[in-house]
Image (cartoon, rainbow, N blue to C red; front, side, top):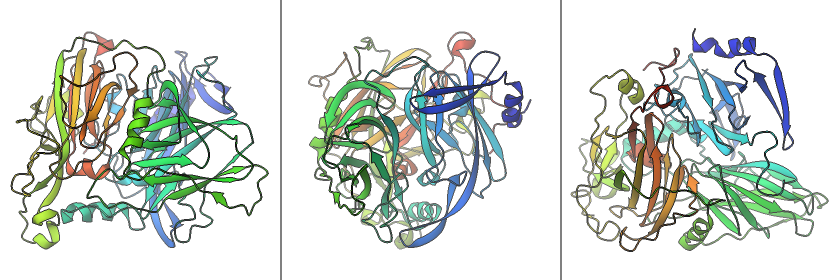
Length: 576
């Protein structure tokens, strides 16, 4: 039976339609024979003509929506999404933060777990949100299409299971993004061809709207209407491509209650910072005088040599009863390079309850992350070697720049096809030195990385500690590192070079995350159990860094029996 027909067949096999209202959202599901509710979605990848910032262009969307449709479910639901590609571009969809237990084939990163869905083709994603609930999002995972192809994914607790805080009056999704006037495909191609840095975004957006600070955008503003004295849950998602962002609401406190779809101890702050790929749930109480208050998004300028968009995106928190001509009260943001503001929030993230972090470690990994400059080998260096000293920008992990193969690594691994990847990603860098302050920087003579499609094999059940170390070879900056297929405990972090003798770890209530911002010129320590068989991508979620090679792949071997083994591939798996 072909999976492409699964959507229709699933409706036919429904034993009835289930309707559930949870937290004021009505959920419709198919009641299947095994008793697991199934949420059915139909995604059409299509272009849409939009006008923003005084310019009109075609963008790639899902179902003609920007941002795309929200996927709703409850914990342990099955989700089936048929994706049909009606554009000339290749596409895949990644379900960010979903661990895809025993469903690696549906994870979505192109050339890692699947070949792209080509023009005119379709593929049906079919997975269960097993033991997960919270705020997630989905996005394209091929080239830079993620800049417009993204949307929220909300997984509610099971029926009659309550939040660990008082129910909010309402919930709202806040998607942070970036927008370019030029075509994103062209920008990606020209940037990589130039060997230099990408252009900065023309605007930041909040739910697709840039706000009044930008040209032709006085009326292109997202407005959230609130009732005085009521408390709201805001689901914050940074879906941006290349920029980490501060977020604040004028005169209002934000109480963090969830990070990366895991509950946290409540932590109240004036400002939060989200890197691309990170989500936070915050409670906000409308406890100020009736009026209009700015919700502001600005860049976290963690990189010394990076060009950022300096104009903030603005949305409106509008108290019902406020005069329509009221001026927005401005939001106070920290200095845009304020590392302390970022650390303060990270310090406040603790798991809601005490957790059992393993003490005995099977595999210790130490991985450097950062930028490189390669030597120029082009016959037209002015055109193709626009980095420092006529070099070419790259990025690496343990000084190896990841190269996408021309076949899915998962398919090659499953079918035992040799030649498209190797299993020799190193446990540590080839040499140790002062990574932050003493890195080699005689560009480009000693700043080069190796190229390769290298993977690291882990036995099923391995207990892994991984230290990320930022390097100053080209530019120290904050790197949001995302791990597919697993979540991990962030047991420690700090500035400077990691020192096991002085590093302080939290093994009592560390946050459980899938994306961690490795501090500027610093390190972060994570621990995870490799209990999900398959091929899993780990990469920086700043897309230009990913394009330059800041990624690697873990292969987790099968365990014992069917419940610990990678299933066979779906029949409609796209071909390269």
